[in-house]
Length: 563
Ligand code: SF4
Image 1: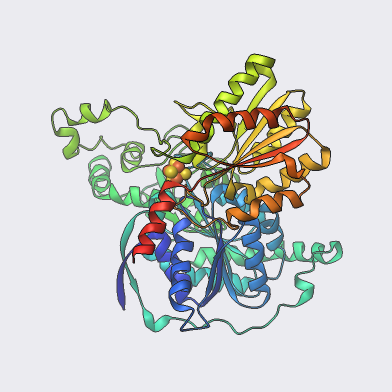
Image 2 (image 1 turned 90 degrees about the vertical axis):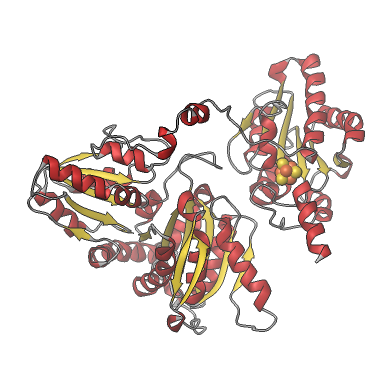
């Protein structure tokens, strides 16, 4: 037995390695990034001495990552693919169809949700995707479970021939705890053995059969989750008023209040104990356990991290006379992360008096601290690029009016330029949307449209929008902010070096004289503004590549060079 202190993401990554992983793929996205970083570090350190070291690589986007993982599974070996919650939207096409393939080597899709949107543009809950595709979903609540569930998820994937979602949330992904790894249980990788082609040819006649087979598997999967130790049911027939269902980190917050809740129940219902409980750590819903729970209680309180997924499902499967309460009924908030205090309140307990709240003045002091929104680093290259762009936009607005100029931006560090003091963007929607929106605005009649996008985001999903602009000869100015790195998620490498962008864009059909490569720095601000205006005036597709290395990447590169 080996004990280690690991992040939730790292504990899971180690679990996949110990469970016989052959390959991992992903696209960086907070809070999932550390899973792949752990696997890549293992790959880089060990591949020279051991050719069997599991491959671990970043990909252009979540779709390509999942498709690579599907290829590994098809070859009979175990694969993991990692992404943040919104990344699953990008990978939704292969994901939904993977559910209909006869998964051969175990396939885990590790998705990290971000309730409270600490570093995201939405709060979506990946359990809905699992339900949509009818595939199992595991939800660890501790670092130890994250480690152990890697083994179980591969087993389920190979036994039932389905992909499995492993759902993380920020608090688990990014917190550390001791995990115990039983090294005697380390498994070898699967041997190479291709899947039956009939299981993977999703032509209509075969896909129809696969879909029916997927539906037929649901009873087996429910039987599995009902028997799973990850879904413990503790019945207390004495308490007929209430039962409690927990999901994800909701369980931890419930357990944190358990001693006080026991005392509260003893006072209110002497000798009756606390209500029956069911924790749901694996999906689909363990229906028998839920029915047993509903038989004991009139009301079920659902405490779950994320959107009210379980609450919604329970309303559909439980008898009409069973009342379900939680986020839909306002007992817990619909938006944002849960915490022990919110759960405490939902249980009917008095607010906890913490050391901090009792310390005179400190609580008031904290409550009155000004907000500290994220900002571009001092000296960030995007500062110079946006200053040039803002000056160009100001000149164009003066000439044509504000409704004739748009700046659509994208996801990355440069999104921070959308906020004060630069206020340089009018939209930030999703990966790659900047160029598509600029094209749409142009076709709607806006004279000057800019699509601002980073180097990695361009390769992720901006490139196809540029193809659309070229194919339709739409006047658009793409401003490609090349900081040579995927900065926002911790400086992962961009899939192509800076030198490749110009020939790539030329190959897509942009006229060579309208691909302008500029060094972005304070001395060039004015000259760069002129170029941006010139290209905006061009009635075709132009791409202005503004290049300078991210300061953080520069620091990391220097540190490595000194080693
Ligand atoms: S990490 Fe790099 S790209 Fe991001 S704000 Fe800082 S300097 Fe700019």
